[in-house]
Length: 111
Length: 116
Image (cartoon, rainbow over the protein chains, first blue to last red):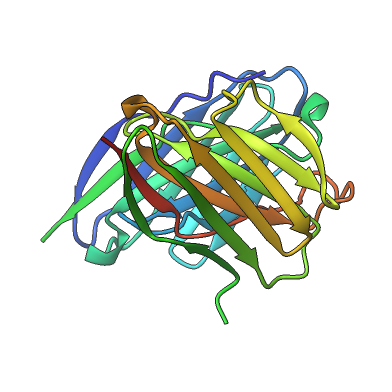
């Protein structure tokens, strides 16, 4: 199962909140990851969800609904340094430890 | 020390050249991966090694040849590439050995490759 869909771009103001949605095929779902990637740098791990609900880590939260095949990454109190690409990745049972990635959402934070 | 390192960071090569990309991980992991990242496209998995054994070759053209001499090092040998092969090549590592669904991949900074 692939077809990981997320918006291409989002723009928000410093101090605001932005929600990045990700949808995926539910069959065989076995975990969802969010990564942050600054231009020219390595993707860095942000969060992991496998059960329904909200996982909070400081200014960043990630939500999962397995029945809907839906996740979002919530970025609160936006800072200029949050300008980056955010990648949604899904693990499927038949793929063992491999990940299927979305194309990424480029978030631009404006002053 | 940085978890996953890659060299070189930038590479320009002609279509008749032969070059190699190097990846090294200092995390004690057993699985290593090569990905291709093109603009506005999802990361494409190319190769997977688990305990030095290649477990995945994702229909990658033979002009890309991986090598994994040990669990800490991974190479990608390049020869007679095409301009459409220009992209960011990312290496990643994870615990491996059936570490479970939560197993997280950690990425290197990538090699930006331009084929002329």
